[in-house]
Length: 170
Image 1: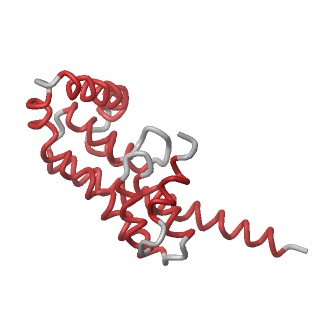
Image 2: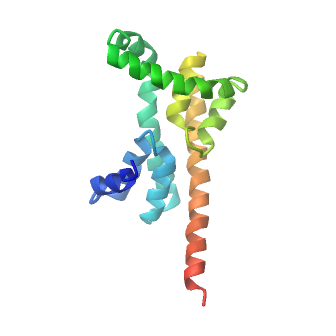
Image 3: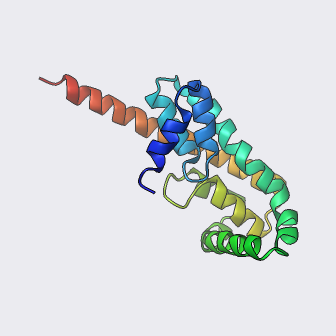
C-alpha cells in the first residue's frame, strides 16, 4: 500500500498534466485532494487544477449517485458483490450519522473537509443511505468537491512557497 502513490505516478507518466489531474481526482483514495497536489506539483495554474480536478472527481461519483441504489439491489444477488456493498455501506453509515444532523449542508462540509475517510465517494454512499434526494446530493457533493479543491490548493501553494523560502534562505 505504501507504493500506491509511486505506482500511480509511474502509470501516469507521459500523459498531459491535465489528464493526470483528472485521473487522480477520479480515484477514490485521492479524489480532488490528490489531483490538486499533483497538478500544482506539475506546475499547472490553479484554475486548471481546479477545473480538471473537479471534473475528474465528479466524473467518478456522479454515476454512483444516479445509479448505485438501483444497481445495488441487483448486485446484492451476487454473494461477492453483496459483501463488497455491505462493507462500503457500513463504512459510509458511520459518516452518515454525522452528516444527517445537517442534511445537504452536512454533505457539503463532509465532502469539503480534507481529512481521511471524507470526500465525495463516502459522501455519495452516505447520501444514498440517508435517502437525500439525488438533486440535492449532487449539488451538495459538487459544492463540497469544489471547496475541497480550493482548500487543498491553498494549503499546497502555501507549502510550496514555504519550501521555496527555506531553500533560498542563506
